[in-house]
Image (cartoon, rainbow, N blue to C red; front, side):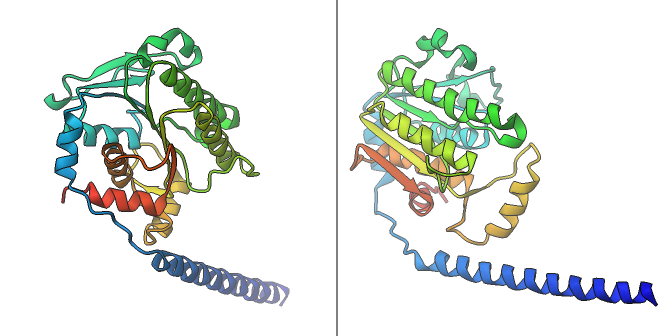
Amino acid sequence: MFIELGMNIFESNWGKTLSFFTAFVAALAAVLYYLDNSETDEIPRMDLNAMEENYRQKNKSCFILGASGETGKALLKEIVERNIFSKITLIGRRQLTFEDKAYVNLVQKVVDFEKLDEYAEAFQGHDVGYCCLGTTKAKAGAEGFVRVDHDYVLKSAELAKAGGCSHFHLESSKGADKTSSFLYLKTKGQVEAEIEDLGFERLSIYRPAVLLVNRQESRPAEWVAQKFLGAFSSMSIPITAVARAMVVNTLKDGEQKVEILENKAICNLGKIGDKK
């Protein structure tokens, strides 16, 4: 009798918990759907082919930090295919290999991020810099995360500025806030603010939401987030759209010295750059 009573209580409590969770998910989905559809699509009209040709004539060079990561790989592919730079340099901790002959003219600089001051030369002579460096707390621990996403990124930006870079692109995160109580968002917000203080002629900060990508490494929490938030464009974005947005934003004239592009703005620029 006691076992049966216990099972009844468990089933009753489980049923209430499941009902509450279902109602919570439904309410959250409704809110996200409203937010998703309350934002208007303001996609500027641009003659991208003309912009690419005009930019090509300027004979500019760029460097990419984090080309081995998902965003960096997508960005490199966009840049190589569009052929808008006279020189492309990859700065990273290891040499990358490419089978496609389109990548044969890439310049690669292998550096030790713990001793970046010794590799200042790698950052010299570039007009544009793209920073896609990043790791996770789960992968590197709290201290390692801050070292990569703050220390490495900031030092790279300092060397880029000293080396003549005029337009710096920084991949950050939705919700970045230097006053946040969450380490991830606080770190992202702090490095944004400190790079802004460096005084680049133009600084473009991208704050994408959940990145939709099939990673080679396993990130269970991110996989769950992608599955749930992937249906809402205000809460997610394909990683290829982020890469295209960075390229399109490079081609167009900057209206502000410092610009922060939130997820919707990134999506809109990414649609312009979509070749489909």
